[in-house]
Image 1 (tube, rainbow, N blue to C red):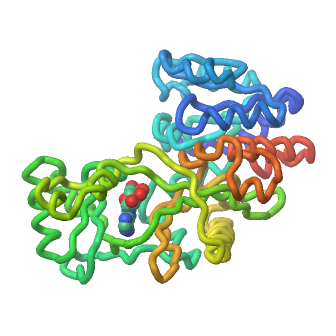
Image 2: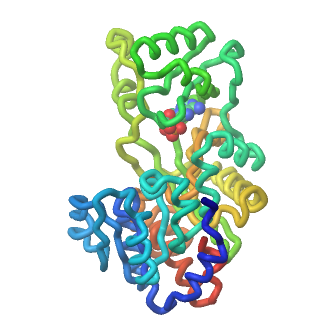
Image 3: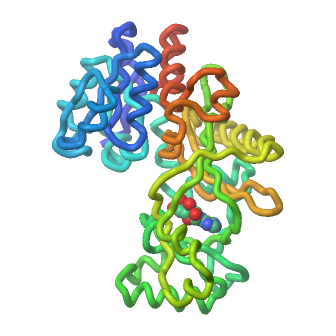
Length: 363
Ligand code: AMP
């Protein structure tokens, strides 16, 4: 099984009736504003929806067509792909689409034209690739520890797949690291073989800003579209009780995202924000051609030296864009009208149609 061939996608796109393009996505994650934005830009919209999950799309009236499937992962089934292509669909990938369809199948079996760069999705999914991209972009990231015996300050320990849930922990010494690993092994939260995979990085004491960028390949320009910060359970609850009670409870912190809120940064930090985005886009062009192409998000912590430190990247639309389904402070500055990330994607596709260069932004 080889990768989906770019020429094959472009020849499918060639057959499309460009006056009848449908913007389609999987009904989850950021699909409400992806579809709403597509309608605002004058496109027909379709949602691939798991049975029983159609209520929000119907009640918010964002989809013209429904493709009902038993399971989200069925979006990669042959019949569903054929139906999407018969509707001249361009699919907008988001976090749930990648998670449910599976990266391998998106790369190898899914030949419906997609917005963005399909090859870059793997670069956010694999920690080493993500790190390579950030390091080669010259972006400040948390220091990584290759050996627990090197721990010389407070660190955060992450296991693959845990993504903020049970399984992240903070330790301030090598002894504490081993104590916590042993306790996790005893509780069967991790297996022996997971210990090898533990990722140890500097704990950054700072405030959380997730920066939502859009790189327009058509204009060769990086736009700052909005920022959010996260509500995380149970760490947020834990921080709201006095230190004495935190010790008494003996609760292990977890970092499960339960919601997002819009934020703005102090204005003097914005030059750093643009530098980081510009550098990443330039580096991505070289490492994973044709580069970022569309929305991406950098999750950052800003410390008291006013350094913006990036601890995570999404190489596609990020869930935090749901905080500006209408506009953010920044998207309003840029566009002077309601502009969500979903609408921005459709505006790019609309420009691609009118300038006859969709091939630059479709993958
Ligand atoms: P992640 O799963 O990498 O998105 O991280 C989940 C949460 O853990 C983040 O939203 C932060 O609150 C916290 N976090 C992750 N990495 C670090 C770090 N290096 N220093 C401090 N907090 C972190």
